[in-house]
Amino acid sequence: MQTFHAEGAPEGPAPRAARRSTGRGAVRGAAAATVAMWGASWLILWVSRDATWYVAPLFAGLAALAVAGPLSRREIGLTWGRGHYAAATLAPLLVVGGVVWLATLTGVARVADTGLGTLGLQVATMAVLTGLGSVVTEDGFFRGALWATLERGGRSTDTILAWTSGAYVVWYLPFLWFEPGLSAGPQAMAVHALNLLLLGLCWGALRLASGSVLVAAWAHGLWNGLAYTLFGFGAARGALGVTDPLRFDPERGWAGVALNAAVFLWLWRRWRRQRETALAERARVADEADPAV
Image (cartoon, rainbow, N blue to C red; front, side, top):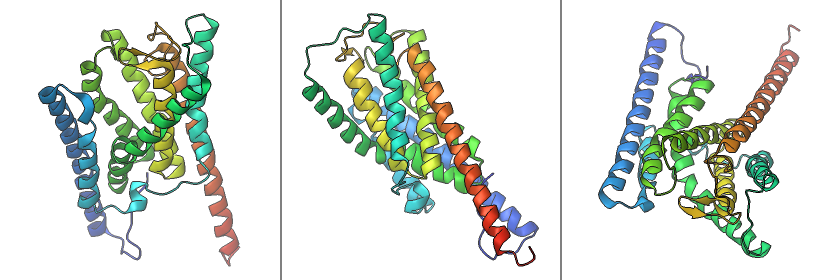
């Protein structure tokens, strides 16, 4: 479990009690912010019948948690996270590419008459725009401010990853119900929600390994650019013309569930190896610095 200790603070019952109180307060604040964001987003859908501003409350939640903390830029994860963008690029490529291969192999894909240059521009534009937007909305709130608040509350890595990924799905559910053609029927909605949970875990694992929301947002933006351009979004078909999204879609289909689960396991094991290496190096440096050894 990761805990935060003031440097030079005395040990004893009083400091431990104070830390427990601070931790409980941080977790209560995280829960309240999550519920508030869900309620505000749902209200926007219910009143306006327009999903355009559904993500807007997440920006307000990010700002509120950052100020209430107060949370530093590094705690939120607004750092470059160098050395992890290759994994953040490979993760969506593996899943979307795998589903493209399966859809083509089974004859489900019907490639539209779109030039590669046009297709590439569409993917790049959506990837950049949604990635930048996600820094201050979805990833900025769930894998940034909410993550940092739970971390400051002394919650374990597993708990933070599960909490933020689960909260992300719960926030997304009204949008799945509202958007026409996004999830047709209970089974389709359940599969879509499962994929969103796995995607949240993947982006959370990238945030965990890199310490950066920007890395997670890059993977998120690239995912949107690839998945929505090639496979469509809502009632709109993508460039591949796939007509069976329940089976062959990276975000709405069973093929996506299998591949997203595999990629999450890869990212999770990658982070575990990284942590074990860092701990071993830290122990080696401590042994070398110990005059008694």
